Image (tube, helix red, strand yellow):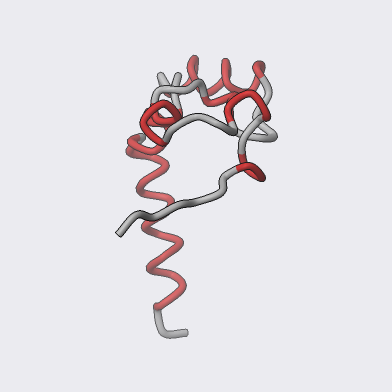
Length: 75
């Protein structure tokens, strides 16, 4: 079964027709709302150059896991 997803709202227009594989290798600035300057800051601070790098970053993954666990933790 084929699955489709519309990511137009989270991507800059020039990347909206990209495949998911291409998006993994796209610069972080391809994400809507991330400027070239902010992308450069991520590169300098964490070595993040692509969307794939961002997804694989240990700090990002840890933050996502903490948020998820906090959402199911009992008060």
